[in-house]
Image (cartoon, rainbow, N blue to C red):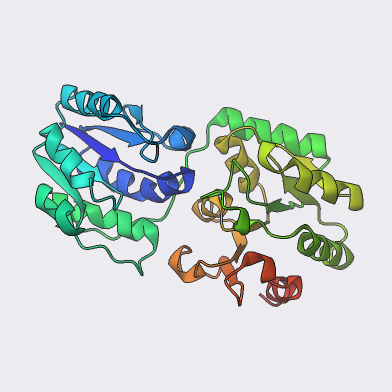
Length: 320
């Protein structure tokens, strides 16, 4: 038996889809399970074992008829028994119907529903991992959604150990600060960046209260300005630049606390059960964070992340 899951979106969406894949593997231990993902999200599967093939397709691009024909050909050639479409695009059901896959599961969404063999109600107020997991109802799997989990390669854990030694971090742990960027942003929107002045206020307060606890900036190519500016003002800060999602996960795994914006880093921290304080603009934290004392979210009163006062963050940090 071969099953394929089409999962539009970024790395965060793939991480949130992992529990669905976990239960799919448990229900069909001998099945070969493939995924179709966007180019920028393929790296997420370095953190998940057991996927047969990762097919790359840019769902958001202005694809030509030839591009769609190539995807259809790839799906037809593999003789899948079942397909799950994790997006809400109205063409999703039609695409699956054209493949000839006998069992086609997706979310009920207008005309899309006509081309599905099982249409699952979309529940906007559900935690995304649970909402993805409900697609399995189309295969008769009605188990509770398991927690997010990751499988970090041993080589990346070793890299993180060496990185901590390079930074001079002892056994007492550290706080990891993550700002949205090309590596860890969920959607890359400019308005999701937290102002530099607010980061400065938080760091200054943190260093005054707990001067012995290292603060580590996680930087990638998307936010050099953020890291450079903070390092110039606070020379005691540590700087790490993981060049893959699995190395970022390895650094998160060693942290005592992750302070971040709404991003992939947040979902990695949740999966690794690391204490997390996440900052939000428009998004309601209750819709993207599981209910747990380990994971706290603060939303801007105006819906703009830039308007979230650092004093509010610090009050939650020290009070929580």
